[in-house]
Length: 266
Image (cartoon, rainbow, N blue to C red; front, side, top):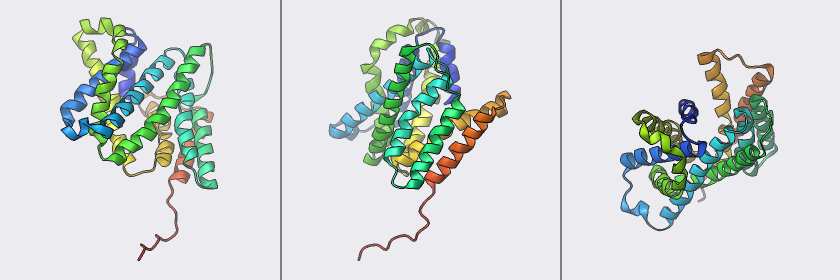
């Protein structure tokens, strides 16, 4: 995901943020369809409708995120966008332990992101939209994973989203004149969409959406670790404390009940 994000930022000089997001969607659709080749059953009825809605919401999330980081500091956008997963986790909470875990994660993410709101009302609007669609991605992604269609629906969904969002291709004009930039666009789709979202489907089949939403908070922690080891970026005290809060919240929310398993009926 972070390699894909770095490529996307490089492409911002040659296409609009929404245009780069559309290229990401196109690249993901081409690779996923070539890989999965969904059967006829995946293109019919309720499964098809769910796949289309899932794909459009997910692609919309990417568009809103790119538009937000074009107007606001990345840390600000990350902190605001995490409102989506935190809300999903909060609604999935059933005990005081869960609530404490969600509060720890929320505070930790804000500390890591070093929130500094500055200068763009539209940036805030796009960031909040990205948060809402991220919540939708989690809820719809769980339904897709539970439905058994999984990655096949992901392929169909991104193909549909590529068509629905095709007007955004207007902002990609310069990219089509360069095979290198086209290849980079496909690379963004593979690194930032195909690999992580396919793994999400594997995880969502095994976890509830609330626990999955909390585990997503490990993303900025991972970014901080990578920044330290690969770029020599030493975290501030607030970022270090935020990392500990996120890890503690995730561990608390993810801990299984220690009681014995219930006896099966009969």
